[in-house]
Structures are given as C-alpha cells and as structure tokens.
Length: 223
Image 1 (cartoon, rainbow, N blue to C red):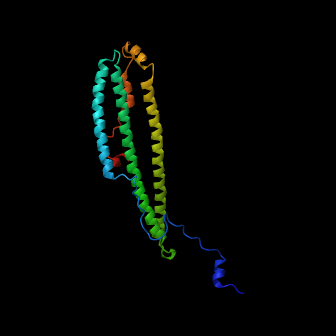
Image 2: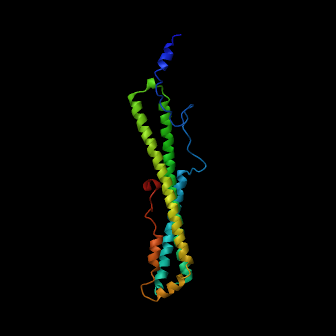
Image 3: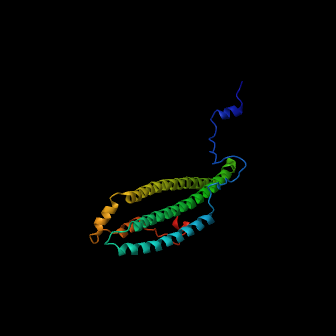
C-alpha cells in the first residue's frame, strides 16, 4: 500500500525540538527560593551591625591590652595578659569570619532569587509555540541562557570561596593553638624579654588580629 503523506513527511526526520526550559511544564509557577536556611535581609543587616559593635569593643580592649603589654615589654609578660591576648585574637577572628559568611549568604540568596526569575522567564518563553516566536524572542532566549550560566558560575564561585576560607581558618586556629600550647613559649618569652626590642607582642597581635576595613559597609557595598 502507498505510504500516507504524513508518513512520507516523517521519513525525512522530525524537526529538532526546542529544548525545555529549566522546570519545564505546567502550570507556569515561579520557583520559590525561600527555604529553612533562608536568612531575611533585615536579619543579615542587623547581625552585621551587631558584629561591627563587637569589633569596635574588641578594638578598645586591644588598645588597653597593647598599653599593658608595652608597659612590660622589657620584662616577662604575665601569663594572664598573654591568655587575654590570644583570646582577643581568636574572638576577632570569629567575628570577622561570621561577617564574611553573612556577606556570602547575602550574595548567594540574591543570585538564587535572580536564577528563579530567569528560569521562570525562560519557561514562559519556551512554552510559546514555535510559530509564534519572533526575532526578539530568540534574542531574549540567548540573553537569558547566558545570564543563567553566569549566575550558576557565580554561585559555584561563592561555594569555592567558602571552602577556601574554611581551610584558611583551620590553619589560623592551628597556629593560635600551637602558640598557646607551645611548651617553650614562656621560656622563650622570658629569654627574649631580657633583650630590648626582641620580644614584640604587639607586632604579632597586629599581624594576627587586624580587622578588615569593613566598618559602615553594607553587604551590597562589599559584594
């Protein structure tokens, strides 16, 4: 029997279908990005303000501690002062780390929201019949796909930065722990303190405990 026209047409191969948009399907509902881990923006700003206040307080404590350390720089530093010194450094590190984490959270949530918006617009666009597509639609599709790739790359970069920060923080903690537990520390400090200018506690304090210049900067300004 003779082949039907529809079969002859199919024998030439089907026309390549346009790939589905992320989350393709009906109904077209924008993906919700808020989850149990979502942190409201006002909470982020509030916590960052609190961190800034705590860092300022530590700065004042550091000035007082520096004064005391300088007053005995050529003598044996008291164990109590050294303990306060290392605790101050550790406390500053913890606050600065949390500040950085909040900035990452702020950026990540903004990117996730933008990704949901782009995906939704793509779904709406790609659900249009091919015959209704215009040149502007094709241009818009290309722009959205490129933006989606960029967003994903930026989110991956944030994850990588967090991993790098954690590794650096572990090294900092180990260094501080080693300095505190080092058996020879007290003996070395006693020997060095007898030589003028040898024992410079504030030099190490400034090296380990410097606060980044982040005061009065919002997450948006730091992004």
